[in-house]
Image 1 (spheres, rainbow, N blue to C red):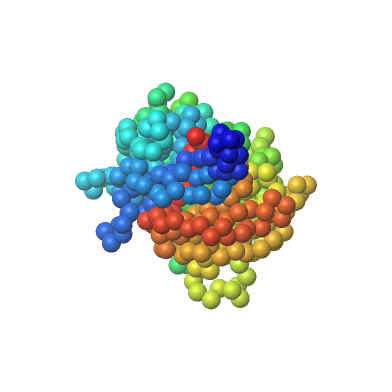
Image 2 (spheres, rainbow, N blue to C red):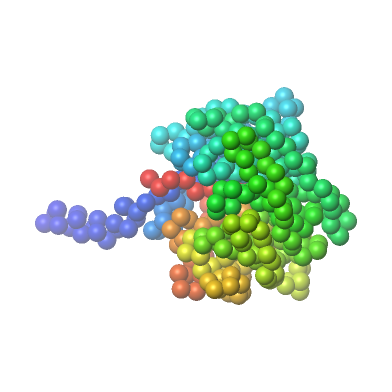
Length: 375
């Protein structure tokens, strides 16, 4: 009888006991008056939506954005190097239990600090975008994932109509296209998505073209649709999303729509767009509004890639510089950089709407959420 009761209880709570738990890596902003000390780690249960309290995984200065190696065993971050060396990149080995990081090596960027970092799909090169320096850098990776000295640095040129924010180029994000042949770099300062052809063997990039966003919009981050036919950019200055039709063969972006994430009548305080994500199923898109402290949800037309507004949800925190969706696409986690929080929202699989779960944990100055392998 006792065995039957025990088995029954296990069946009742089985969703929480046997659900896959994904590891999360959290990049933060460190400062003299802040509590953050580096990169943090947490565990997320995809069945219950439970997020563990983040703990310090590696102490390092200003690891704003992080990126996983394709093998899931290494993690890379932007950083500030010690002894006034300036901005750099760092490689870490992930411990077997997935909780801590061991520093392997670092390399200086040589053109200020990086705003974003990514790894190509074959793990041969690491790329960074320097907002202040106005450049894109390339670092070859060794077979065991160590970062080699910088092999290329390309400076952007131009300006935009916003004299305060667009006096010069400001690359803000960097990522490879679905074919791993082209590199896309949204530049807030020149209202373009600069496209490069990648030579992974030589660690070089060659200017290939660009996609245009509306003048003064300030493109910030980009994501490709799972089908590879569309790409979407969140515009920081205009608080909007520009949708593109993407031709993977020619490496070209054709703008097809720009839609607001926050109407101007709701700009009661200084606001700006920040992060953009696409649901793994490809049906929904989400974009964050800092200041208004909300996330806007859109449906994606599978035929033409255009967006339709669904709703706007408060993040229950302050300044959502970043957010992410769990690998299963059931939950959205919003990082409040100024409230030192991460809040959990359940995603309605039919409508794409967000429902606050009532779960919020504290994390010092979170500005990047990256999911690792499930355990």
